[in-house]
Length: 327
Image 1 (spheres, rainbow, N blue to C red):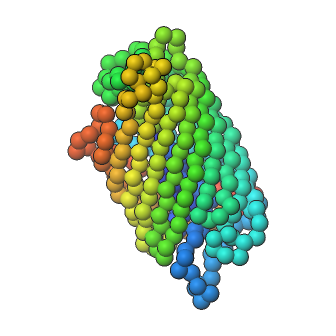
Image 2 (cartoon, rainbow, N blue to C red):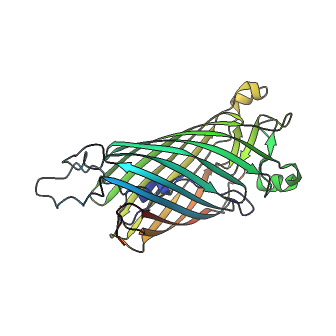
Image 3 (cartoon, one colour):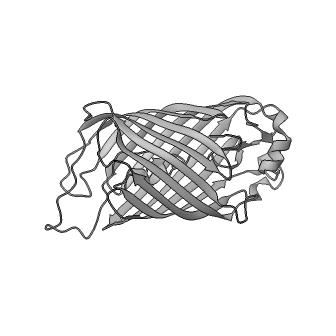
């Protein structure tokens, strides 16, 4: 996630499962998802036939590899999943249902994250994912740095000056991600929230917050963070998707972290265009929907990144079926 600075590995993955060219749901996030079919209230009995469903049981890998600028970073996000369709549905609203579970692994030069993940989609418009991650910071690239006050300067320049204070440590990260999604003709709308709880083992006396390269903010060592990624997309062709994304992060502090800490606002928001192009539209194969993703975004709010320089991200995603996948 970090070449020299963090990489927000969020969820461009958010769109990948929806769009025909497969924008993906990441992880923060945003990581490529199971292809999704979402409800279209304009469908009629004379509408074109529904797209083919995948296998009733799937064993597959998703991979999302991304590089970022402002801040700078690099990360690979991967999941190994076993998936089962829950019931046979006849409508576009009910037919794309599933439950899956497996292992999530994320790696970058600053830290490693590993843990189980489960996902539940009873209807095409509603998805719920829960993940636990064991987090290991290795003390490299200036991470992890902790702070006694959430009002501390955590800009890139300030952290460069205190690289020698970085240390290795570990902790626990719990994530629940509800997603609402819908498709109207060639238009896709999607909103994913993330409710996160962190429990990190910080060095004694070093403070109650730390800089997380994924979220690009000061995070409570034991506390909550909320995020949102919302997309408006146009499925221009079977391979090309264009649109815009709004992203926001809201860390929450308490006065136990210092007098007045509960009122500190280190949230940030950004918005901008994105485009995804699939090199192939084949699904449920050993190399499904290889997709290139590009995004620009401008900060609407940030403690230290406001200005003309945009946030930029480039990624490559694909899915590989291991059980019954076509060659």
